[in-house]
Length: 69
Image (tube, rainbow, N blue to C red; front, side, top):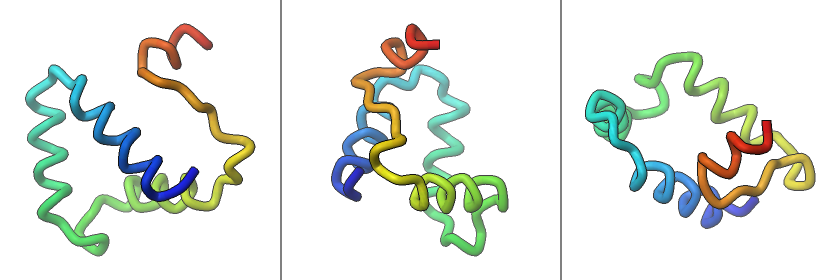
């Protein structure tokens, strides 16, 4: 997955969020640098970046993803 595809996926996810608390957290992350992010978030970002493209799940929405489980 390219960086552009990752950005688009995040934008789509954020656009469908209805929980204002989560949106507030996202706004806080926007203001944070990598050093200020919680360690768990940084580790997840590093894991996602290291994952080979062929092992990623491609989906168009969270609802489609949840149906796969």
